[in-house]
Length: 182
Image (tube, rainbow, N blue to C red; front, side, top):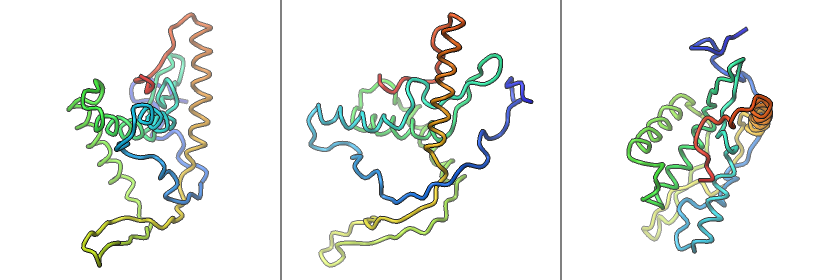
C-alpha cells in the first residue's frame, strides 16, 4: 500500500493497458494555426483542440488520504502541444511564455525519445517532378496504441470523486493545473 506522500507512489498508474488499433491520420481535421480563418472559426478550432483535455483538472489523478495530485504524462503532453499551438497563433497569450515553451519543447523531446516508437509508417514524397517537394504520410495506416479512451474514462471518474470529496468537505474545487478553457 502506498502513502502517496513524497516519493511513495507507484512508477506507473497503469503498467499495462488495453490496446487500441488506430488508423492514422485520424485527427487530420485539426488545423494547426487556422490560416485564413475568421475569429469565430479560430475559436471553434481551439475548442476542438481543447476537447482532448479533461476540464478542469487537465488530467491529474488525486490519491490517498490527502488527495495528492499526480499528473499523467499523456495529458501533460497534450497540454504542451495545445499550449505551443495556441502560443504560435496568439503571441500575446499569457500562458505560453518563453520559459513554458522551452519546458514543453524539451518535455516533448524527452518523451519522444523515451517512447522510441518503431512502428513503420508509410512515407511518400510528392511533387518531385515539379520541384515542389512535400513530405508527408498521406496514406492512412494502422498503429496499435495504448487505449487512451480507457485512461480518459478513469481520469473522469477520479475527477468526479474529487469534486464529491471537495463538496463533502467544504473545500474549493481541487485542480492540478490551468483550466484550458481560459
